[in-house]
Length: 157
Image (cartoon, rainbow, N blue to C red):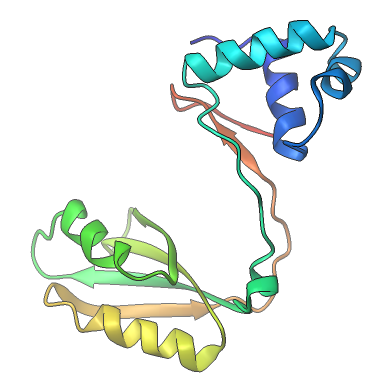
């Protein structure tokens, strides 16, 4: 589905505050509330909007420490095997395959450094893991919500 400027503006408004009313969004983008509702319904039906969710500050839940862990795996370990193994760990908030020497990069959130260490130990115990390399996040400098459309194009909210 091709998104026009109004669709993008509506999505941007919803990303910033999904609890905004159609009237509030309409004022912002220059449409009536009913026109915004029709567009949001169409965006949901086509899959451009996949749902609505609350963004929670991880520190409010006690997850005050985060780390990035590179995985180096045996031979040709498949991405799906890595995904299945790390999906079992609630501390792994994202995982992706990457270029370079490592096979995958994991983003971990935990309560403290000891908790990060325990998670890394569990990951390292997987039979396909040769070694890990981790970096603890000291502070976040920039965190911009990105929106990714179904066709893969990404833009800043």
